[in-house]
Length: 254
Picture 1 (cartoon, rainbow, N blue to C red):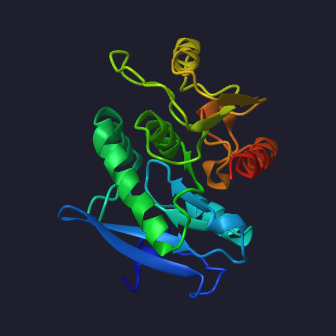
Picture 2 (picture 1 turned 60 degrees about the horizontal axis):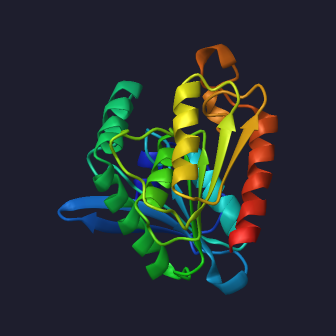
Picture 3 (picture 1 turned 180 degrees about the vertical axis):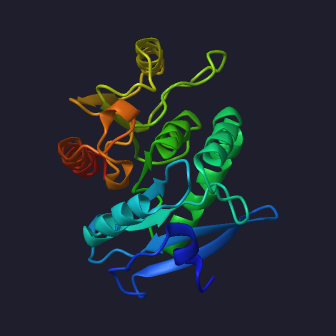
């Protein structure tokens, strides 16, 4: 565990103290999972917590930085490990295969989310004051948390996949939902967007979907490059706006 952060997140300087950051090992059966807990840097309202679901390559610098920022705002924060020790992707092909497995086997995805949520609560977050957020593959997971009726106040999907198997029936949803979506994201068709919005209406959900101009997939990630033609790229304005929309959402639901 000594070198866990470097091996998973890559080499970077951690800007918060070890007292604020804790590596947590937990299990799904025999599978070892390695999450990151960030203690709230100041008191918050009723020990509210944020569970972060990372993108398709697993825990990355973007997820870590988001967790740190939220901890500095006073939220207990936990970055979930979905894949587990020995299963971390080393390239895009592996990431696509492993993310695809959990998208198809959504109940196993929901199980990994529940296990991470339990770690956040055990670390000190109030179980009645938690929001789940996710990026890309993690954004899909945030929506799956809502579909699975995982008991949280709200979920937020940043440029996440929206679709589910059309044969699945979504129950009535009590969890509040925010979807932050790039207006030019090529990975979600208009038919898929329409199907998602119909799902939300049929489920009588309290949902919002905000579009960001000139933004494609991965628009919140500074490491995504700046070429929209590739389908995934960072957009500073959209990233800043979606972060502010997240903070408004957190204030409302927590």
